[in-house]
Image 1 (cartoon, helix red, strand yellow):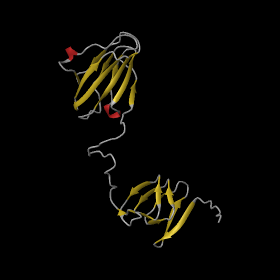
Image 2: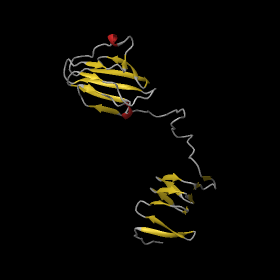
Image 3: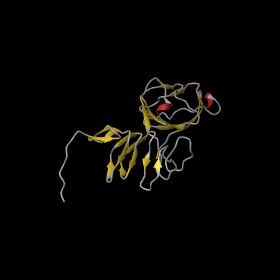
Image 4: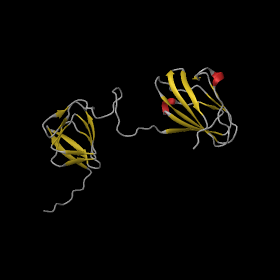
Length: 205
């Protein structure tokens, strides 16, 4: 049996004596009552005190209010979603796939100040001498790598007092100075004013 098509901007239905409006395009709507369906709810954003029942949810964003989600087995999820299979901020995690952080490209300047709040890993191409200033956004426990590339030859890098090398500033080795050379600065944030680091020099095949 063939069915026709209905083209509308909104669908209005009555729930407990009050009209509820669903925006059809993308079905983005805050519903204060219950949403009952026998088919599939796909690509919708459902927000508010809503019970969803009788439907298969695919690609749907759920923002739970004081209601919940009624599942096919009769149970209702009314609080936070069970995060046992999701990464959380405070829980210990075991990942089965590779995890990685993006590399933040930092423009050359005579004084470079990294914002550690913007990422863990950075890349700087030197076209002149520079000083690595005390970074911002320091949080104890953060670690990462700064890739330093010689865009020309002979460029140097000095370090502000917040960058602390084993043995003190007098022990810091010089960067590899040949054009195209790559050095890695491996760092660990000790506290809000101290970043411990090592230089891994002259990375090449």
